[in-house]
Image 1 (spheres, rainbow, N blue to C red):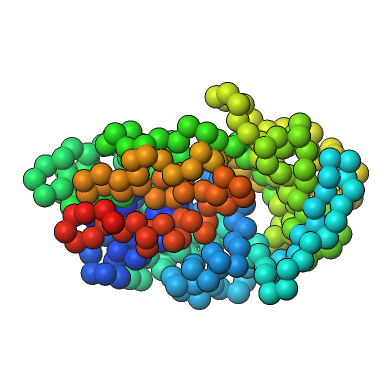
Image 2 (image 1 turned 90 degrees about the horizontal axis):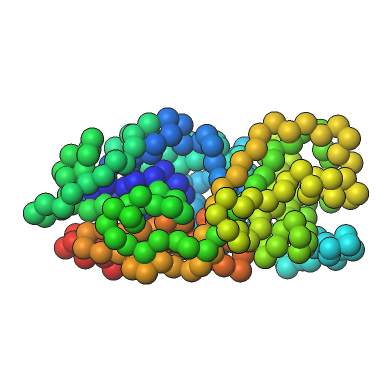
Length: 295
C-alpha cells in the first residue's frame, strides 16, 4: 500500500494500515516532515483523544488552552468557557517528526524527500513511479492533490487562504485562552487568532479566497492587534501559509483501490476550518480493505 503525503491524515492512515498487517510505504516530498507546515497545530479535545491512539503525546510538545476570548470587529470582547473542554497548542514541527517515528515503529516504510510523479494501473494494483508495484494508493497530498488528478477523483474548489506568524517577545493577556477575532475585511468568512503556543506565540488569520491567488493580509492584522496586545518587542521567527479547503468532501472521494484522505478529500470542517480531527478519523472510517474495496 502506498500513502502519498506525510500529513496528519497520511501518517494516521499509514499507521492504521500497518497495524492491520499491510505492508505500507509512506512517501513525502519534503526531506523533513516538520518543515514548511501549513497548519496552526491547534488540536481540539476530540482530536487529542484520537491522536493519542498513535502513541502518548510527549508532554514537552503540547500546552493546554482552556478557554476562548472572542473579539468583535471593534475589539469589544467576551470570554467563552466550556467546563472540561480544552485545546492543545502544539510544537507542530516536532509533533510531525514524532508522528513519523510512531509510523516507523509499527513498520511503515517512510521515504522522505520522495515525490509522487504518477502511477499506472495494472492487474491487482498499480505501478507507481520511483516506488514499484503497490496494491492500493491513498492520497493525503493536500488540497490540490496530484493523486486526485491522476485518478480522476474529486478536487477541492472552495478555499480559505490562511497565513500565520510564529513570534517571540510577546506576552498575551490571558495566556490560557485562544484569542479569536472577527473582521469582515481582514478575515472575511472566517477569523483571526492569537495564542501562546509551545515556546512561541502564534498569530494568524484566514479569509475566503474569492479568486485564485488571493491571500490574507497578516501585516494589517498585526497592526490591528497592536491595539490589544503589546507587540513593541515582537520578533517574527517563522511564517506559514496555505490553502484550506472548505467546500466539503470531494466527490468521488475514492475509486478502485484508490482513496483520498485529509485535505485532499476535503475532510475539513467548513464551519471551523479544522482539519486535524477529521484527518485522524478519516483513515479509520474510510479504510482500504484487503479485498481492494474502499469502505
